[in-house]
Length: 138
Image (cartoon, rainbow, N blue to C red; front, side, top):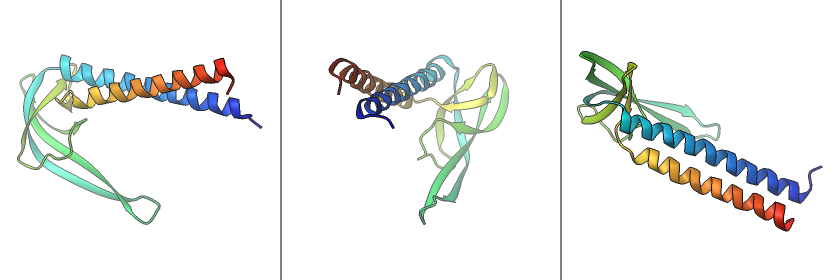
């Protein structure tokens, strides 16, 4: 059985690992929104799916499809990493992967920044907790 110190160290390491995941995810998101080409898209369809959550309720999943032009070709694809408040007919800025123009993402940098901040907080909490456990022995 794990003693209390070991449990605290495991929690600290999990916080650190979670922080690193969010930092990497935020970095990828920011790269997409700052380095990928930007274009304008029109929301063509919003699909809502409801699935049981196992506790008697439902979880809503929203899929937003857009039409946009990239590299001289028109695409109709599902929009990734975007706000779910978009409605059919809305016009929005998007970015696309120049190597795979069918990959389209929301152009807002807010999500990436939030992921980086959250990851930094988690990582710092994990490091601080690990240091406290290792140095103080609690």
